[in-house]
Structures are given as structure tokens and as C-alpha cells.
Length: 186
Length: 99
Image (cartoon, rainbow over all chains, first blue to last red; front, side, top):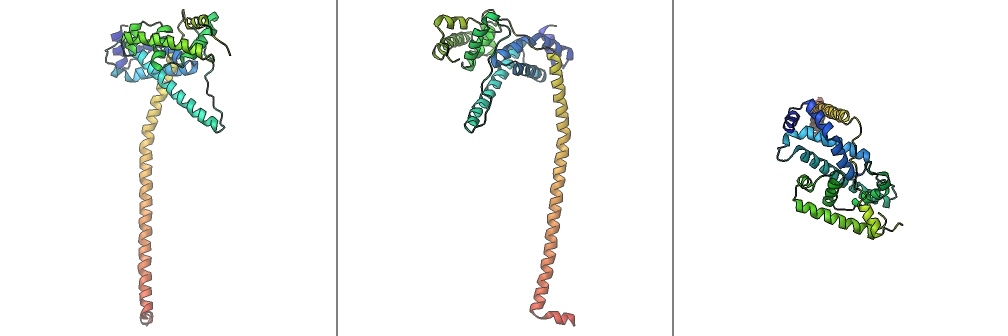
């Protein structure tokens, strides 16, 4: 099935086209979302929401970019929205704590399933430090490092220039070095 | 508290090298289809429930209005009757009526 046929099938609400889309993109979407939210259950839930959104709003896909770019964009947007909501809950939880109500504030340590065993501990520290980066740097870092996308693909997903992505990556690494050396509690 | 040396920091930064993409959990497609089905059922219900709710609320408003109007009408009748009685008793017209 070519991309044009797939898009047309999705626009016609074809079951076969939708199944093909899910099977083709499920791992990519899950991997990106998992890298950003760092929690398996939440990532699975969000990945499902991404496909539901694609199914419901495929008519708004103008074909100006590749289908994969559009899907990755939905996935990153959903994941970042989710993180923002989680951070709001976290702040609210801190307020509740003042009034003596205990709330689960911290995420448990995240171990990415694709990391080799000997690197697991180091990667967990890196994922924790990543949470402190600005959204754009974090997104670029995850798309390039965990999904293995090129700077060009990443720039299209994030709707910016390749130069901007290079800058995000450079600053992300600098910032991570700073976090890891200055704040040893990551 | 663990202190990271410069070499450790570099090791941490390179820990994602050679990472394998995470695989989505099993039965993703079936789960999505289930969610889509639930979503459409929910939407169907909301379309059925909404008009019923609106009609019920309108009927409730009408009943309350009718009740208030009837209460007011009764009150006006009572007030006008009692004012006639007061007037007639004040001018001693009750007896003449009786006669």
C-alpha cells in the first residue's frame, strides 16, 4: 500500500487502511511518546490517543508533509501536553502537601526497554536529567537519540529549521552537562 | 549523594548510543478499535440523553410556572374577598346584607 493509497483509505474510513497504519507506526509512536513521558502505561494510553486522533482528523491532513511527519507531530504534541498537565498536578500536589495531604509527586525511575543492561543505570540518570530541559531541546533530543531521526526529519516534525535543531541539540548537551555536574541529585 | 566526574557525565550522555526502539505493547490495534467503539457509543448516548434532559427541564419549568400562577390567582381572589368583607364590616353593611 503506497502512502497516497493509505491516506485515501483513511479518508474513506477503511478498516484495512487504519489497521495497516497502526501496524506500521505503532512502535514509532510508542517509542517517541515513551521517551518523552517516561512512563509505560501513560505512553501506551497516549499512543492509542494519537491513532484515534489520526483516524478522526485525517481529513485535516493536507499532504504538505509526509504522513509520518504529521503522525510524529501529533505524538510529540500529545506527549508534551500530557507532561504539562502532569507538572500542573505536581504543583497542585505540592500545595496539597502544605495542607498535609500526601500526593505522589515524583515519577519512578525510568528504564527504557531498548537500553543495554550495562548502560541502564547511566541512561536512567540521563532520562531524569532530560526532564529538566526546555520542551524544544527535550523533544529534539528524544527524536534524534531514541528514534534515530535525522536533523532534517526532526526539523520538519518540529516545524523549524535544521539550524535551529542543531542549536537545540548543542544547548541540550550543554545544559545536561551543567545539570549533571552542578546538581548531583538528578 | 553521588558526585559525577567529567568522564562519568560523558558516559551518561553517551548511554543512549545504540539504543533500540521500544516496542509497542501487544494488541495495540484491538485496543484502539475498542476505544473508538466506546467513543462512538458514548457520543450516541449523549445525543439521546441531551434532548430528553432538555425536554424534562422545560416541562419542569412549565409546571413550576403554572403552579406559581395558580397560587397568585388564588391569593388575589382571597385578597379581593377579604377586602370586600372588611369594607362592608367597616360601614356596617353586614346587617343590611343579612336583612
